[in-house]
Image 1 (cartoon, rainbow, N blue to C red):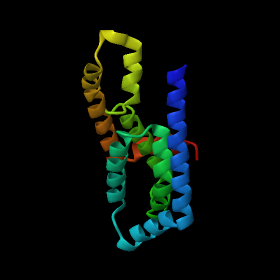
Image 2 (cartoon, rainbow, N blue to C red):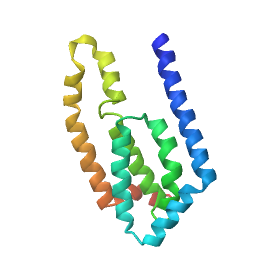
Image 3 (cartoon, helix red, strand yellow):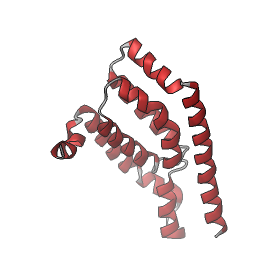
Image 4 (cartoon, rainbow, N blue to C red):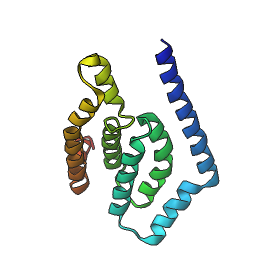
Length: 160
């Protein structure tokens, strides 16, 4: 129970910190300012997608999914809107980025879940080595989704 309390408290403090940072950034107008800069620079939206991919992968190594969403999305969402990116497509990409973050070391929460299930029969480094192929597959899927947004937009297009 003590470990559960510790984990829950950690997630809570990350969420509170992310919410406070997000509120400060929103009050300061930084997301809209950055979105305006992106529009002024006339950058290809693909560069924002690639940049946010790298950002999510790096931050996903150190933050849990909820904390990462609370921290990054309030900043990136106005930029996506300013550049006219499809928000459903970006939502699918963000979910894929979060999935990658859940298996990348050192946080790699899903690896620790597997370790808890298998116990001492498999070492944690062995689990992370086994996850390399999943990371490669996820990177390939993200590449496909970036190259062909229609893949992630097919089902939502049927709902219109």
